[in-house]
Each structure stands twice: as structure tokens, then as C-alpha cells.
Image (cartoon, rainbow, N blue to C red; front, side, top):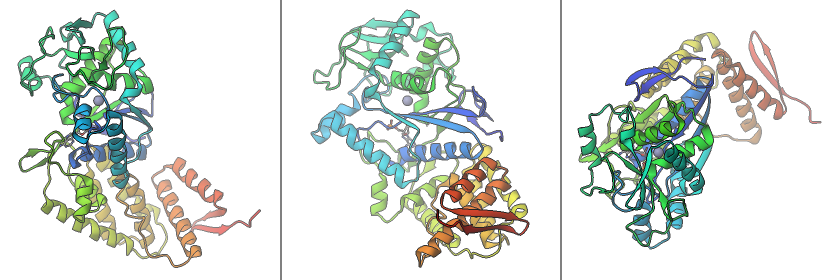
Length: 472
Ligand code: AMP
Ligand code: ZN
């Protein structure tokens, strides 16, 4: 298995991803707060996380990816003040919080599907894990990290030797980051303390509330991610992802409470995607006038053209959105699709010549997830004098990670028999590419798939021949 390196916000270095169990990656992703549509900035983060998971799997890792859905506890200000965003959404649309959550969760996954973002292995709603939050908060009390004040339960950051591990900010800078809302919570002993459980909500009509040892209330936002991650992935997490705004306070607080409860290092590698911006600054849901995927579609931009737009730039750099830039990406993407669909079905798959391209593609991804470089390898293949079959097989292989739909469109298919032959040929080319990449596991899976379709393969020096086994 190849070493897969990318920037770790914790160590501030590009370094290989290490895993607690060899070859297995336990990955947690902060999911959306479902009080509104995801904007295309949010979706940039989810696209890049999707590429990361696929690139890890492509490199041979077994990844389990868990995502939460924040449907309670995320207040308007990250400093635990303001209103629960879910309530804000419910009021705006004259619906219940539950209706809002259902609607926007479905809308989010519909966007993901259009963008070829794979559904995570586990998706968990925050409101379904109340028992887990209560248990975790009890542990924090037992270990002396929690206190009650003004009716709420808080995490005591002064008890930690290293609260600022992720940011390495000086306290004074953190205070100003916390204070992105003028209101201050007077109950906190220390300004960086944060709420674990709200019992004394200032919103009398708070719709979502549960019994707890500290009174009827609801969980803070940060506790959700720690508890959901531990529920599904245990006490050792290999990889945690989110947008850069999550670094402080959300992820900083997740680390604080998780490590205080566990008594050991919790997550070893932190992946953060920089923001999509507009000329006038960061795109933000709370500002209201944000761009959605549907709006791009209405204007004639396919979701995959937007994915292409995102892949062209590095995840650690801010990406400025403009329709002019998207137009350029759209035209490049359409040309690329056409070049791939025009590839002739000639020649055989040539393993030896294909190998360096596979190598370049892997190297680009394993070196801080350089998607722009990985895309340029696709163009190198198309420009090369490889056979049409080899090019097609390589592009298909690359598209397992890029997920730009490059090889699905193909040519018009005139008959079911022709369609079947094309499918088999494509699978054989994919298997050969897997073998060239020494991914024998994948090659065997493809062979088995073909056998299940009744296809027998015969490998020889001249390539792979196939025929249909007689029906039983
Ligand atoms: P939210 O739905 O607000 O909880 O955010 C969902 C994800 O989108 C989080 O990982 C955020 O860090 C990320 N995010 C928020 N704003 C942006 C932006 N402008 N560009 C990229 N990612 C963002
Ligand atoms: Zn989170």
C-alpha cells in the first residue's frame, strides 16, 4: 500500500496518514446543519472530502466514513449564544423543526448524488444519539471537566494543559474568534468554556428537548460529533474532516472533550478544506443570499461541471467563485467529456505503457491530494499515443476517484447485444488497468463480476479474450 500524505492541521505538516489498525481508516466528517439548503461553498468541502475517501480507497485503504447530520444544538453564534439554527429555519418556513430537518437532509443528499459524492458508510442524525451525549457528559463530570452554571452544563477548558492544540493560537486571539457575536454567556467560568448541555434555554418554545440528569434540555453542538464518532468508530479516530471554519471552536472543542473523556489522544490526522469565497468574502448560509447547486443548474451549469471547477484548485487554498470562472470550467469539462467519448475502440490494453500514467496519477493524489495535477494526468493520457482502448481504460480508472462521469456517457449504443459487449470490454479494460496497478484484489472482483454475468475470460500473451458461457 502506498504512503498517502496530506496536510495535517494538528501537526501543521504534510505527513503520511497513519492508522490505528494497519490499512484501515476510521474517518469522521462533520455533516451539514440542516436548517437550509447547502450552499456551493459547503459542497466544495464535501466534494474534496469525497475525493479524499476515494483516493484513499484507490490507494488500497479500507475506509469507514461516518457523517453526522446536525439537526439540533448549532446556535447562531459558535460562542454558544443566539438562537438554535434549526429553530430559525422552522420559523422562517412556518414548519416544525422535524419537517425542516427532513427536507434539508434529503435536499443535501440529492445534491451529493448529483455531484457523484458517495453516501457515507454511516449517517447519523444528532437527535438520535441523546443517550450517548448524556453518557459522555457524565464521564466528563466524573473526570472533573464539567460544571453546571446558570442551569447549563459547561466544559471547563481551564482544566486542560493544552486546549489550543489544533490552532496554537494565543488565548487572546481565541477570545476574539469566540466573540463573533456581541453577546457573551455570563455563566462561563472562562471565556473558552463551552456548553455541553443546555437546560436553561432562553427560547421558551424550544421544540426539541430531552430529559437528562441536569434537567430537560438539549445538547451542545460540539458534543454531537465526539459522541457520534465514538459510537461508530471507537476511541481512536484516524481522520477527521471539515471546512476551515470548523477548526475553531468546533474541532478544538471536540478534541478537548473527547480527550478529557478518553484520557488519550483521540484523532491523529485533521483534514480541512479552505473556503469557497465570492468577491465580497466567504459564502455563508446565515447571510441568506447564497448560491445553491439548483441555482447553478437553472443557469445551465451541470453539477459535474461544478465538481470539475472544484477539482481544478487545491483544497488548501481559498477558491473564489465567479460565473466567469465557472463558465471556463464548464467549457473545459464539456470538451474533456467529448474527447473521452470520441476515443476510438481500437487496439488492446497496453499495461507497460499505461503504468507510468497510473503512477503519476497516484503520486499526485498521495502528495497532499493534488487534484489539479491528477486532472492534468487525464489530459496527458488523452494527448499520448496510447491506443484508444488503453486511454479509455485509464480514464475509467482515474474516474473512480475524480467521479466526473467521464466514461459513463460513451457512444450511442444501438442494440442490447452491442451494449453488453461494450460493458464486457470496458470491464476487461478496467481489470487490466487494475492488474497493471498491481491491484489484484480489484482485478479479481471484476473477474468475478464478469463470471456472474456468464462471461468466461481467457488471458494470453495477446490480451484477454472472452466468451459467453452457455446458459445452465
Ligand atoms: P454547516 O452546514 O454550516 O454545518 O457546514 C457544512 C460544512 O461546510 C462544514 O464542514 C463547514 O466547515 C463547511 N463550509 C462552510 N462554509 C464554507 C465555505 N464558504 N466554503 C467551503 N466550506 C464551507
Ligand atoms: Zn462536527
